[in-house]
Amino acid sequence: MAVETVHYPKGVVQLQQMVKKELARSKTKWDFRDAVDLGLEIVEHIGVLAAPFYFTWGAFRVAVILYLVTLHLGISLSYHRNLSHKSFKLTKSLEYLFAYFGLHAAQGDPMFWVSIHRYHHQFTDTDRDPHSPIEGFWFSHMSWIFHHNYLKEKCGEPNNVMDLQKQAYYRFLRKTHLLHIVGLALLLYVVGGLPHLIWGMGVRIAVGHHSTFVVNSVCHIWGSRPWNTKDLSKNNWVMGLLGHGEGWHNNHHAFEFSARLGLEWWQLDVPWYILKLLAYLGLAKDVKVPTEIQKLKLSFKNTTQFDQLENSSTKSIY
Ligand SMILES: [Zn+2]
Ligand SMILES: [Zn+2]
Image 1 (spheres, rainbow, N blue to C red):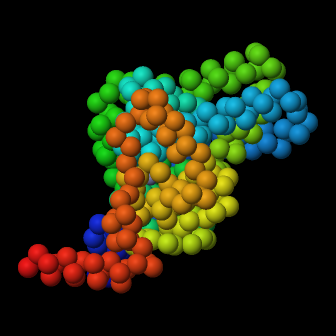
Image 2 (image 1 turned 90 degrees about the horizontal axis):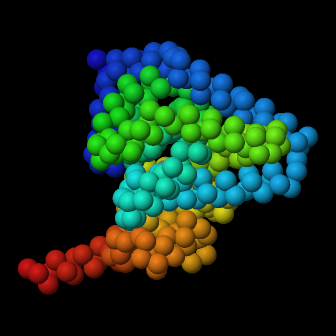
Image 3 (image 1 turned 30 degrees about the horizontal axis):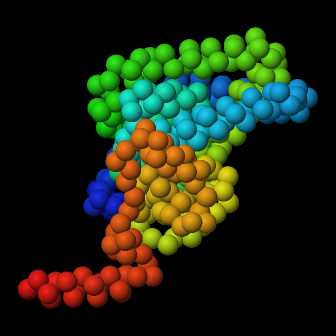
């Protein structure tokens, strides 16, 4: 039986041809959750098409404010840097509040999002990555969210989020997250009618979705690679500017523990600036960033210099 070897950062995975065929079969099986997600994507994109006809400055302001709160604080700072990677600690009430903001980005409850993301780091750009462009641009960008069965079969059960699972708050959000989103939609409709609903939910959620999806697709295809990571991750300055700091994706795969993604002064990273303010106010602590020696170790530029440094330190010890 043919055996294919796939490399990933923490070693080598061997997937038998038979396993790959099984996986390919599960990719074609749709279930109810896939249909619901596809339906929601269609509805929000219809909202985008209708948006110019319902534009008001009030609705636009609501959309921008909700975008900043749910994407910068919710997805980037909370779901990604705080919950997935534990790059820093927040006071518990602030941790829960920011996670609640993230839920309103309509990208799934915290446990779902964190589980998928941790699998992405564990199996980056291999057959078991939940959303790698090795399965095509469209799959990595968006269509992976319509394949719940496939994701479960290739990555495994979401048993990599026990730290969240044991907290009643996250279990509550898992069970009820759609109700909260529907509640916000109703509130916007009551307050500002169709313009608030279309801009505050449809446009805001669609833009937030694509600004997150491009990190999985574009930032694993186009851009620069200052760090010697064993995957396809790239720093993409366009996505870095547009995507709430997440576009410095090669930086992130090199130092996944780091709370700071824009490592150079010119690499815009708004959530990092917010985190610095929170730390200054005493609301965040244990903020992790890479050390110079860690940077030297992974820098293409300095690989030789690092080898020399390592050799010299080895010599001095022995
Ligand atoms: Zn990635
Ligand atoms: Zn990450």
